[in-house]
Image (tube, rainbow, N blue to C red; front, top):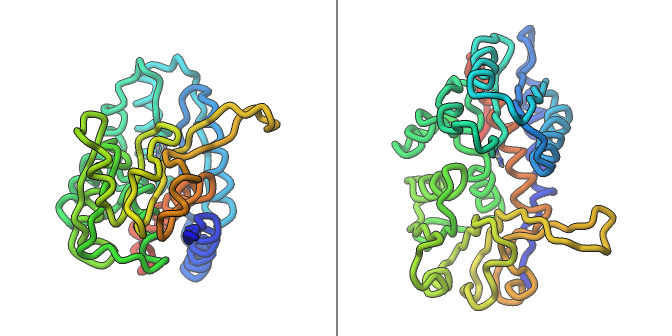
Length: 298
Ligand code: GUN
């Protein structure tokens, strides 16, 4: 039976470490603060943002969310980002993605002050990552690396296959795990919707990272026996037996994979909570940098 990589438990542990770190460092400075911009009323995004607010409160990070109507225009959104860029009380800025389709998402991301880009998605921070001198690493990739590190799953010399090429998960996690160093040094392959003969590639992976956004896409025939599977997917599936009318499933068909693998992250309760925990990590890191405080964060 596979090891279940419990992201809730690991998150709790790291959040108490971050809380302690903050308590030890805080003197007369203003406390760290994360500002979130949420445009529109996408149900899943609203849930994520509420979870982020709660997590900040738990570790002592101040937080505020700017909820903007779904028909906000480009200029209004950029103005809000610039207000936060110029606010000395703000250490971290997160623009919840996806933005409505009429918005130029790239321009919004490129407007965030890189020194407050705790999501690690500004080209400056992505460039630093690719260069091998990361400052803010995107939260999901960093969370995945922490899951592997803290469960003693070796990456050095291992074959990592990533399904998905998004700017926020697939591309940065490939950079992170192929870097030199502890928790990295992997041989990485990125697959996507145009990849020929996908099962041939995934079934050679020592570590398979599924970030496709399609429910139950990876089944037992696509994984290598004894491998580790990291499921980044969060998909809603209709389920009349649930009060909400749906349940959350990953990109991996958990039941068909679990008998075969060494370890797997569940959905929910795997990568999801770790993404939020790394957002707290990065916000604390930003605050430490601007206050010239030493510290022990990822
Ligand atoms: N939407 C889903 N995940 C994320 C994330 O990590 N950051 C942002 N900004 N938006 C998201």
